[in-house]
Image (cartoon, rainbow, N blue to C red; front, top):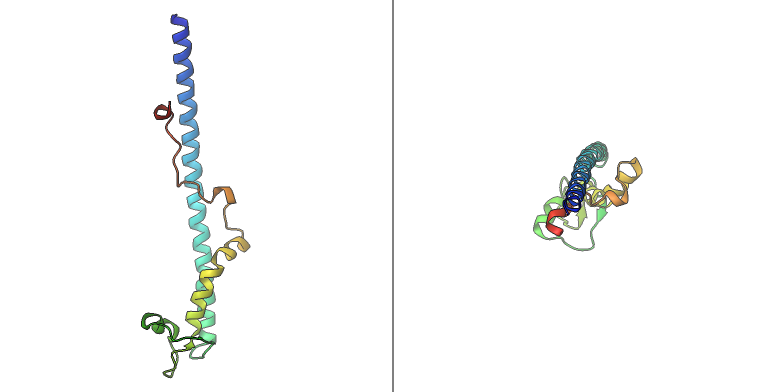
Length: 135
């Protein structure tokens, strides 16, 4: 009888050690992934910032698009930024750039090779269930 309980205790101990090793490995991988995402986000932000400065100098004070509607007051201040005149359907480069940068940010990350693998996209959001609580 004692041998069965000793074997069960040893098995439980080795299982606990294995779970601890896996959890430690997961924490390290999650930390590495977070650092990688931070670096890639910084590079993409820098690229978008430089492009914004270049385009802002190139299209300063010029109407680059005509909106098919009059935007609400808060959006008007962004869409008409830096433009002369009172036609609120005129669109400045800054507003158009803002809309485009929102839509192409993830594609730019993929193009530059900074996007994490598909399976790693949600890593770090969920914890491994505790084996002691599940059994």
